[in-house]
Length: 591
Image (cartoon, rainbow, N blue to C red; front, side, top):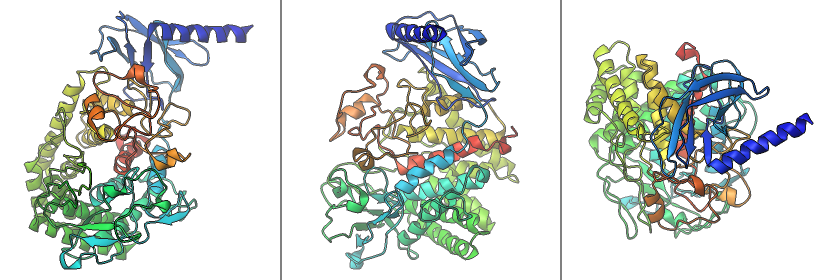
């Protein structure tokens, strides 16, 4: 009888929820004991919610009851929205939230909720490997490639096999790969205890005494060395959108670039490129050179005790790459093909700033510090921050890692104050923009908006760690929780996290279309509806399961045909590794 009564009560609660068209959105992973904890109540109707309560999920006992003073900003079609702050609850356990007749999913409060999550993201990085792909246990693109824009060396074969495929397609870019490599190396440097050793260098299961994040970073560094084979010679990209011939596994790639199995390798020229109708707007090489230099310099520091000879090579490469960037200021954009889409990067001083501060760290040469400060002053705040829109990858990387690098100099108080202010100004702009919606998300919903969220989280975490200022913690929590289900759609944005949660399953990927999954991948994320409606070759393959949750602000679809919101990206995933590793490692926060 007791079982029947409990079952009937659950059905009644669910029917009330459906009838009232109300939902409570939470972080499905849960919350650490000292976290800012805020759930969001959304409703189609005009609700006058006065209070909410937390109950123990097992016993039903009321643990906390709180009054609600006022509603949050609306997000049509959700006319009534409330932020339910329960940060004072710190006791470990499993809970649910009740507000009126609406009940949240169960969630945990525990300090172990993020354990293993940074390593989990590396599953996607291994799946994206070019060359030997451990997911397929086979190799791909072993004939890469032939040089284009190489002058007298046009059509010359070079060995460019390796690295990672950028996303669902098999193009490869130094811009995203160097950034991904740097971000993973930085994550290890900051939080080494957050990473395990369960895979060997080639990505197959096993232990080799090297943390998996360093094996993945080494995969990137080895490829970057191939793409910068000598001083003054840099390559920026492998393949172009002739790749876009439909879903197939990388070891079955049949894209035709005119030279059999070889793919084109674009040399950096500092001038506009594009083999077909469309051209990019390249003005120089420094954006690419700076990214090479920062990845090499960070790699040199990390590998010094592990592989001294490799470390020396990386140091030499970093110095050379930075010099080449100084000689060739400007942006080196990716090249379009038959469609007008490419990474429209418009800034480069951030790349040179980061390269300079990393070179200062490994050499102690004051000249590099002077360069870092000079470049940093040219762009105090990354331009997408506070803006309503931007072109695709226009301001990249989305997080300027040079600012915290300078701010973290313990013996330069003036620089510390100046560059912490730059970081604080950016965070304030994001915070103000986020106040316009109930989820407090302050990034523009452009293509790859989740990458901007990851950048916001990194900037907030590093700012609070360096400065000791905790004033942005609620904003940070809002963006963190957004990625794991506290959003209009109630879905995590990372495939497979949490294991039994609601997360993307029908992503834009050959693996998914052919019955596989892409565990660990961070999807692009919501976009303005105008973006979704105006992109070429985009559609929905089935009925929109989230149709009732699409808002006036942004749309998201768990549909393989929507490459604007539901495609995982290699660099976005790599850029989330630091933040999740930081949540796992509590030592540096004094917790």
